[in-house]
Length: 213
Figure 1 (spheres, rainbow, N blue to C red):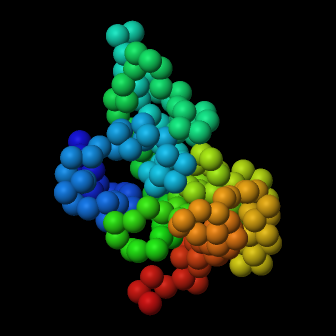
Figure 2: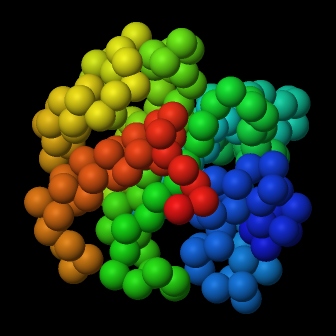
């Protein structure tokens, strides 16, 4: 399937994926590009891998020996390196549909459209009685690989989903990454953006948030 086909068929069921693809390259490119092709590049500033981490997705590989599944978290093993074997192809991507899980995608770039991300983020959240049961904070552009903020996630699990706890966690988030400065932005800008995206995610998923505003 091309990315444009994915966008048109799954944006309703997977709105965060639709949000990503709406600012992914141009329609001409989406009409020929594929999700597997984007994953295979293993770009550290790629947008799809952080979001698929937030969705708890799995990748299916195929070879002459059959198929195997791998959690998306284990796909990238180094800079531009993946767990894809020499005789394998990316066959498909499995994205679980979980009504309890809130998933968002964010992209920070110089332009809204047709631009490489300075920072991208895929966030997934499951609450239970107002507390964090499970959370994924995955980023592109913050390290040499797409990476989850594991220590920040651990800090939030079993805590109240409150602005106070999010602001405390955002300070930890700043310590987890050592991004670089390049033509797109400075390392400091990337750190600040990552913290602000986490706070934005809180406001968009808190009980007091009104999406009609």
